[in-house]
Length: 332
Image 1: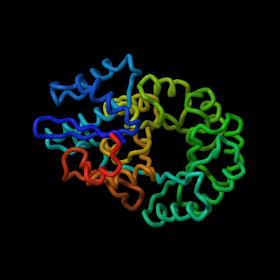
Image 2: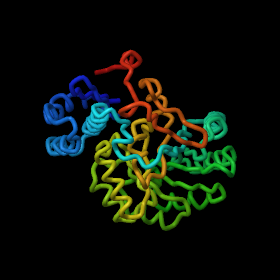
Image 3: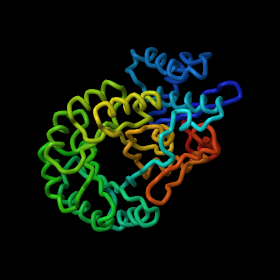
């Protein structure tokens, strides 16, 4: 986790992303000088300055995403507004889906996790990982999918995520063999770089095909949409360029009659998601939920029905980074 703080007078905005500790040098040496002494309310101008400034380093860097989030947080703090309101929220409840079901889990672990989400928290959508070892254990993938379908029952949507691990025809065969499981969402059945492959699979399977979590700039998402590669566009606010670029990605999706889904980091996405008319849902990712709950005061809990709700009584994004809690894990 790369945490960035932006100081604006007495206010301090916070943003974060996930990456190597080397990002710290990029923030301090390249990006910070580009935003220093700028108008704190000119978030888009600062973001564009960073994009131009780090172009030769490989636009966009994930560190740019962290600063973008911190700048929006700062602006909300300066205006004493909840960030969702600043971004023009369109809903006060954001749907989520439980995400985990890792291939390392045995049936007992998988059942426990799904029982917690479905019966404990009332989340009506859950996802497991498939394509174990890059598609070398299809039989186990199918067995685990069938087990997950039985555990969650008919009233819960079942999603699978292959993380790009199958070949094109392999993904189609798996989807057809799992037809009785009524899988509704097939995430990255092949690499998200294989737009033609995603399109081929999308035309051949009943589940919605989704991808996009590895998009780092707007043209990436435009190419994905133009290729007819997905039924729902995914974007990760901690990778795609922060809130500024998230809004642009959502507009590209909307212009093509697609919804957008947020990948990972649900608390980081929450306010932007609440201001996105064509949002489908956010990923209640087991890893990131644990991290955000450990390291931030104000992390949002899942509500019955699989919903998150911004706390409108708090300004900014409602989260305060806990230095004391993070201290044992700090590496830079």
